[in-house]
Length: 115
Picture 1 (cartoon, rainbow, N blue to C red):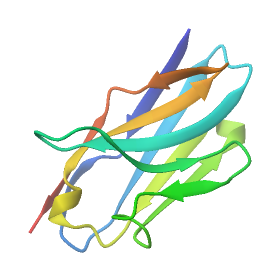
Picture 2: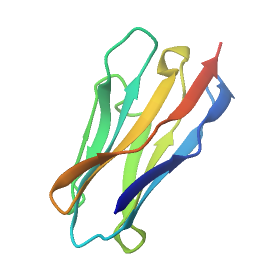
Picture 3: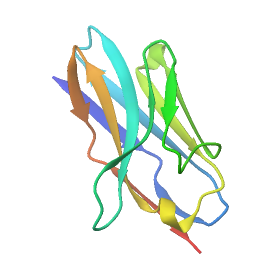
Picture 4: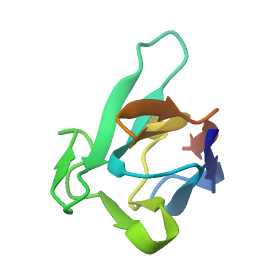
């Protein structure tokens, strides 16, 4: 059984920083791309950033230059460093991981940015 668990959300003032972590665990034979998505109230879930097993990254235009995604393959973990946070970054952030060819999702972690 595979689990994907996020951590690191919280409340921060505009202009501040947060670092999210997400670890995949269980029967992992292959770990593919990992990514972060977010969903604000009343909005659809959207891609924030994604990183391939080889380290290639893509970012949403809205976070480019402010957020950095990275991964530690030895720990089956992906990180999202979020700097210069804005109130519009407020959302539940979900981690996604392709494990053994199947996409798994975490339960989400809330990020709230106050103005």
